[in-house]
View 1 (cartoon, rainbow, N blue to C red):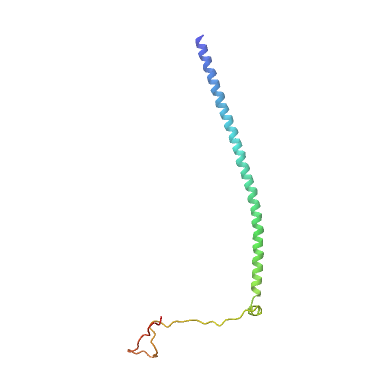
View 2 (cartoon, helix red, strand yellow):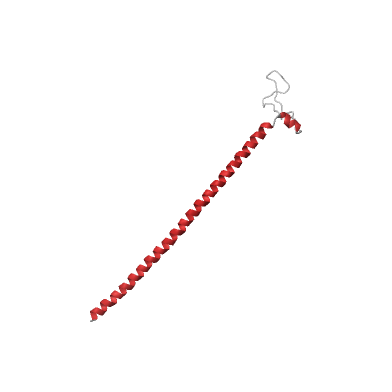
Length: 121
């Protein structure tokens, strides 16, 4: 009879371990299923948001194209007469030049006795 008790005690212990392992497997499966639903929901919301942003981008692209067209048509109407009508005047350009380093002071012909002008730069 003592053998039967030992075997019966071991089967109860094995039965509890099997239930524990089965519970861990089921809980893990449930947690993974919830994680999958969460990830899937995030993907769906990202797709909807991307489509909304794409439509906004198309609207903005159309607005930019309209503004470019208005700019080009306004730029073609500006000419010299229009600028004079607005009060702009043409300026007389004055350019400043330097004499080259080897320029000779006061002489037009090159002679060996010619001196370089001091502080010309």
